[in-house]
Length: 74
Image (cartoon, rainbow, N blue to C red; front, side):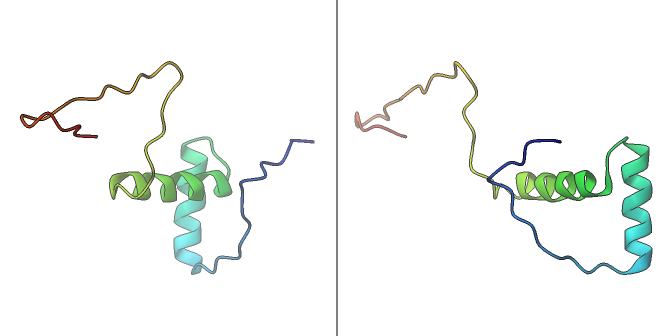
């Protein structure tokens, strides 16, 4: 059995039949589960709207820069 991510929250979502059919077909086309497709759709919408916090990748360094006044711009 797969290990459950403690950061995942469950909730009930009501979707009309036509929308659900479209999501299921899209998921199948992308080789994802319906749940996985919904997670992807939501994550992509949040990313495009710049609503997700930026995540640092391994080894990514934070470069601090100063403006003309010598103040940190970060």
